[in-house]
Image (cartoon, rainbow, N blue to C red; front, side, top):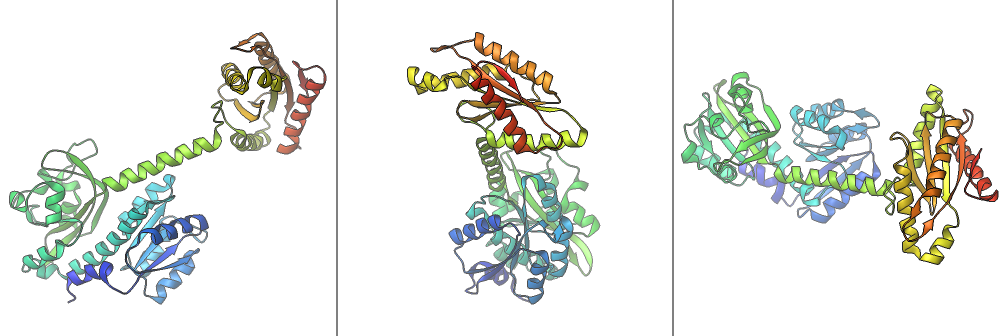
Length: 452
């Protein structure tokens, strides 16, 4: 039987390159993965990239693949069935699933089905990707060898200790009653307990398992107990362990039954602290949300920018056509704004823009969208409103602005154009008509409302 220590070390120390199969149809995400690998991989590797599931299956049939990184949403495959095809074809090849923020449930379900790990798509941290690949290979080889070594496990405890001491995961062995019979140094390090302190004790009552709120799960719900009673392999992508000092940490756990002469005599559980991975995923989510906000928000006034307005208008036009709902636009800009900048300075002009937005935003409905169109021009989308109501809104805003005293500048006026969406026109024509109405208001003396 191949030596388990050699099997584990082969993934990270062999001169032979690790062959990685990347199944990803989005070229941008594929480039991010390739760059992350090239930046941090300290061992030889070969990356084979395909953009279709069937191409990936063909590569697996050819053999020689050490690890698969795959998206669950492909042009020729979607969801868990995509993973099932890969896993059923090459059950001994570890699979790392790529997931978007909205697809975490699919990814976790894939882990329960046999995937080794999952990563959130986006600018993946290189070190996280490298570690995930290394862990995937190590875990896959470890449990393949452990299944073959179950009969020798009880008789070769010293050998097992040597093997597990080089693996960066906690491993412990339970007897059929759930009492600890073995724990490796990494488990001691992660838990703060020594093997001697826990030998013969029911692990569930000491370290595992816990809910997110710290309450203890019944023993029957724990993977290492369930595998003893059912004989199946159980995975929990986010469990919680309790350290000796009482602190909790999130962990990914895999439990497999331990057999002797075809009789289940206990279980083997492997776990790893996923705090760093969770923190990295949460930080990435926060950064993506920040970038999305910055991409759709005007930095000076804090309202939506032209990009956000155009996207929303497009959706509202489709809704208007589908349900025959009225939709109107109000476009307005500040009269003689250049004179304000020239007379009082650009800082004062910026103050007028912010004050104007504050005044307008406080006097429009929550379901209407106010956006800065460009410079001193603004656009207001008035949903479920015909031309007459939109005109009244425009006149109300015009009057309020005219009567308002702007700090350091005094009186300011605005010109308004109003149009209602025509069922047979497109977005460009709709905007063109309201723009023309605004310029008629300018030509006819400013500080007025014109209807398209």
